[in-house]
Image 1 (cartoon, helix red, strand yellow):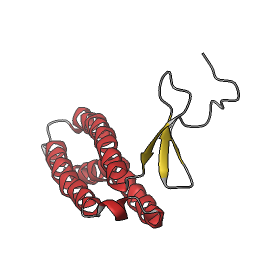
Image 2 (spheres, helix red, strand yellow):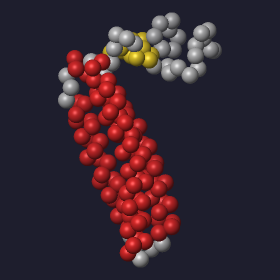
Image 3 (tube, one colour):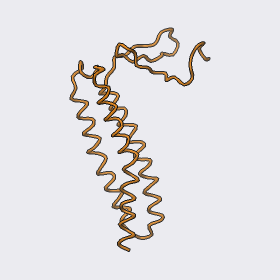
Image 4 (cartoon, one colour):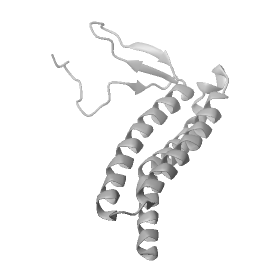
Length: 143
């Protein structure tokens, strides 16, 4: 049942001014309030980015394998893609997990979080296309 005054474009989870995240609970009149934790938010972003990255990697590499003929370069691209993303994600995770509980809930970290979040998603979406494209270009040059 739709609540009166609810806006369909607004997310179910919102960041409040006090630095807490409110999430509606099923069957409750008031939303549950959880403290903001940048570490958890970055961890969630990394998990979702890895899912997107893996899907794109499979899609792009399979296309290159079908178009590439008998060349081993698309397979090498697949290995490089896997080897490239794991250390990058570990660096993001490590940087944010080093925060203390107090620092992890500070609103002052919002700009740094957005910067790292943007960089993470640029890598997750762009890297499969960039590296596969580079290996396809190399296979054209070599052939």
